[in-house]
Length: 482
Image 1 (tube, one colour):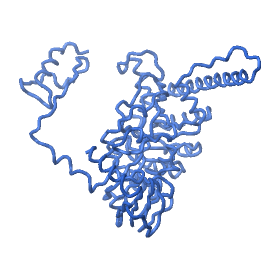
Image 2: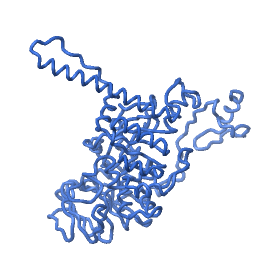
Image 3: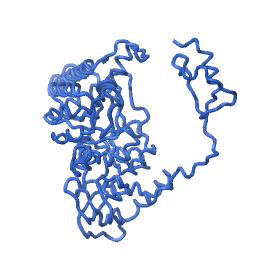
Image 4: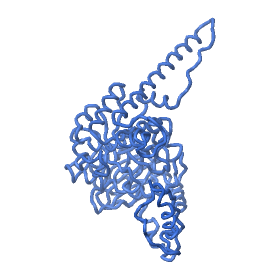
């Protein structure tokens, strides 16, 4: 499928003199309302004109959108797509690691996201560390080299994390609760999370001060006519360099969060260190502190209605996005999932259903608002002249449950076309085809008790596993159980 897609895209790129005309659709601009029976002219990947009865030069590609709805390409501000190893869980602070170095451009989920109208993702480090790695922003130019997918000029971002994830992975694991091998690692509590953050920023401040002293000494030495020994520069530290960039306002912090108390804690810490560029991720109790979020200018990227999947999200509500929006917080709806990303327009519709968010504002939650959160609203997120031609064409209004994405363009190039998509792959399954063998890693210390006493016969297999051999091995290690 990937080979076919690449060939097809190459053919389109060579055709039409880089001009595309989308004819007669209902255009949902997000910023300037709904424009019925409107054309969009695209030239060299940018939106050149918007209006009725536009003309295109000979050879231009013409897409008939009459009876259909055209919206900006959907943006997911919280994704883990195209990366295999999400967490560098070796230290509570790993600001130096970068997602951009480990992107897999061949992951099929990229193509599936295109089928849901998604054109840009913000692929993030996981939430194991208080200060994790640096995410990457990508256009979904599926089939092209990774260098073409990564938006090289996108603002730098970094992932922070609060609550149960970093305390479980580091502090409590080091205390033996989860089998960790390290000792006395902070944080084990939410209080410890705050101290890890403050300590890291204090170290960055000292690092910056050392370099400032060196730079002044260096300049004085260069101006001096009678030069003594050349000043020695401090040792470069990539971790502290990144933290210093946060303090200078050069990096946008995206902070995994749930509870209201820890959200307020981060606001206090950031005020103390003068950091202003802050987006809370998940932020499921954001509705409790919406006023404080708005006063700070913090943005919020949340789920539409996920909750109760662990204790710290017990008090979430599907009204969260609507309430924060009412208080003036910039709110986006994210997927955090390679599966849900295909239906973010349904997630936006829930904001209309839960809390009565206006339709344009709901669409902004999956287009313009996440564009602001990743610092790219000057290029993407709405349909305006001069912006990138990232567009999705739907069979009906995208907030309708009956809507289907029919075509997705990135930079004016069609990356998904339902009419040319291969037939349902499930039809090609051979019911007589044998399955690959599965491998079971057996550990006597944590085997499943439900298999004790089970009877299995030689030759009994399930999903590639020899059940007879598995049960025999468990019984042999019965006494090893702690």
